[in-house]
Each structure stands twice: as C-alpha cells, then as structure tokens.
Image 1: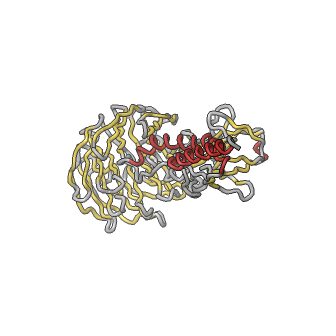
Image 2 (image 1 turned 120 degrees about the horizontal axis):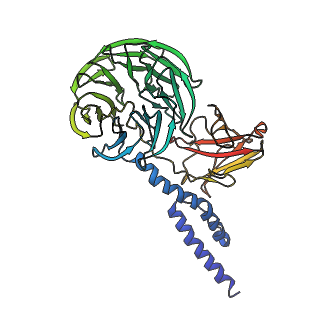
Image 3 (image 1 turned 45 degrees about the vertical axis):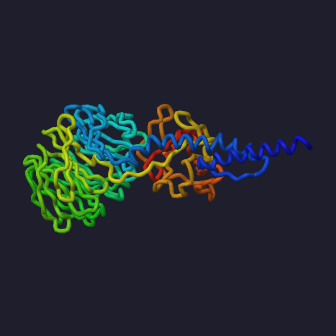
Length: 483
C-alpha cells in the first residue's frame, strides 16, 4: 500500500513528461495510465527515431528546394558546373563533372541536376544539397547536347550522336532503354503532363514526338534547318523549336502535331524558353548577341534586347521575374528583369558556358522527410529474402501525417533486377498490387505509413527492386530475393 501508489504516481509523472516531449516533437500519443512509459519507449525506438532521421534528411535535402532557386551552368572547356544562387546572383559552388559538359536539366523537386558530358560519353548526377557528383551514368557514345527530366522525376531523356535517345531511370541512375528518332537529335523537352517527349533532329530537320508510355515515335514533324532548342508551353498546347540555320522559330500545335507558325528572329537562334505564365518565348540569337521575345498570343517578335557574347542557354526563375541568359564567349550569365527586359547584373562563370536545357528548377517543392523502411523490410544494401506470393508489409515514416496522397502516380512499382548486381533487367516496371483491401494507411499513434505489397508466386527464383516514388519526386528502393 505504501510503495505501489508512489511508484504508480512516479510512472504517471514520467509518462506525462515523455508525452509532453513527444508532443512538442510532433509524435502524437495517448496517455493510458501505467502502461504509457512502455508504450512511449516503443515509440521512441520506432516513430521517434524515424522522425528524427527524417528531420535530419529534411534539413539537408529540402534546403535546395525551400531556398531561392539555383542556376546550374555547365562550362564546356572548364569541365565543371557553376552554381548560381539566384537570390544573391553569386556563384556559390563549382562542381567538377565530365569532359565537355553541355546539356543540363534539374529534377522537378530541385534535388538533383543531370549534366550531359559530350566528350565524356556520360551524364553526371549532382546532388543539389551538397553540390557534389553522386553518380556518373555511362552512355557508351556522345550525348549530343540537351537532356530533359520527366515531370515526375522518374526518367531523363538524353539525345545521342546518331539516331538514338537514351532513357535513364533516376531511381537507379542506369540506362534502361533507348528510342530511335531522327538523325542527330539535339534539343529535347517533355510535355507538362509527361505524356510526350519532343526531340529536335539536326540533320533530319524534324521533330520526333515520343509517347512515354511506350517509348515509341508517334509523329515526325518537318521544321526548319538545323533545329536545336525545344520548349513546350505550360499548358502543353504548343512546342517552340529554334532553327539554327534558317534563323527562325517553328511553332507546333500539339493537338494534331502540325506547324501553325514560323517566326523570324535573329541570327543563328540556339535555344528557347517559355515564361512560366506562357505569355512569352525568349530566343537566344548566338550570332548577333541578342535575345528575341515572341508573344505567344500573336507569334510575333515584340522586342529584342542585347545579351552577352554568343548567348546560348536561357531559363527563368520560377516566379518568372528574371531570365538568365548564358553567354558562351563572354563567359558569363546575364540576369534580365522580365518586367522591362533590362540587365540587372552579370555573373562571371567558367569557360565557354552553354547550359543547353532547363538549368533552373521550374517549381521548387518541399521534400517529404523519408525516414527509411521499417521492419520487416531492410534498407539497401541489404537484400530481403521473401517467399514468392507472400504479402510484404512496407512501413516507413515521413516525419508526420502528410495525408494518404503521397505516392506519385502509378507507384509503388517493382522491377526485376539481376540478383548479383541489382542492375535492372529491361525498362519495364509494374505497378504493385495490395493484399486484399489493404491500401496505404497511416497510424497517427505511431506516425508510421503502412502499405501491404502482394508479391507474385511466379517470381520464385528471381530478384526485384521495390520502388516507392513520392509526390515530391524522391525515390526510395528496397531489394528483394524471392525463394
């Protein structure tokens, strides 16, 4: 009688202190008398650890996405990339990459930058959080200029010297397929809904339209002479193509893939970019050191302003207030205020910058703080051994409740891989199937998301990679061997 109430009171007090701490940390829990401490300790070993890991990841990974956007400028003869903070218009980092970097594309979430190295026959993958190269994708031949990332961040399309366009899966940073297009493909752009890829073919003087569902050419459109840069309007209705030797821009209506206008511009137009509101198209004219502005409502040039020497790349900040024009022969970037098209400042970069592609992220997003997979699923590099046909509970944390609409469209998916090397076999990923009616669920008490993956019996003797892609574009994988 004398000790038990005091022990209980002490336990309750401790429970209340832990409960208050966890509440401040964002981990919800319910007080349940004398059993609270044990339950809280279990939470600390699961949800709190996951949340803490997630918060640490968020502090690092979301920094690039939450801050002012960065411009990534490949410098051809310096073999590096200058990183410009658009808030201060200063170079904050210089990242060594492969030989002769030309093409560049930033993933939609701003987390990674893909750089095509022409003489390096490769693509460098830069982590924006650390401004370091985290992967190098070997292509086996020369990339021929630009490259583009799909809106969901799942794939990168890279035109190659010849008639091919390589497809890189960002989940593994490996080449998973290719598409035969026209002769010497160069500039490339993806429709806002990710349905089509438009690639300009220099020698063929055409634009190939590739359906991403099948990665096959569904239309070929004649354009001007030596087409280079390609851009799609934000509504996906029109494609603008810069024709280098015919000194004009071809306008294609995507509804029927026909040419609806040809707009004369300056000498040797190289690249095009559409303002975020879709009202104007900026064209870099390499030979006369100017930028032409086309009004999309009339498809006429409404103004032309001077740039640096040999302007090549052009891109906008997400709010559309500034255009960044990359000048190859003056080794700098002109920052233009789009309100009056006046020069704000000039930023010195490396030698012969080109920046062929969308080198500023179009719409930065906050990354979801993924805390890793929980038991029974082991995180890579460990391989999970599972009996084929069994249901696998897939559990993870995101640092709190973000609702149930957290998976990217069509995900999670799985793909067969080689058991020894974990290299994907083919380019086909299949959507996962849930066991019974067990869709994605969130446990508010433990802060854990759970998804039950139903495997197939005929997977026995094979290995697969589970790919959980979230709406922020991030990829999270787990490896499985089926017995």
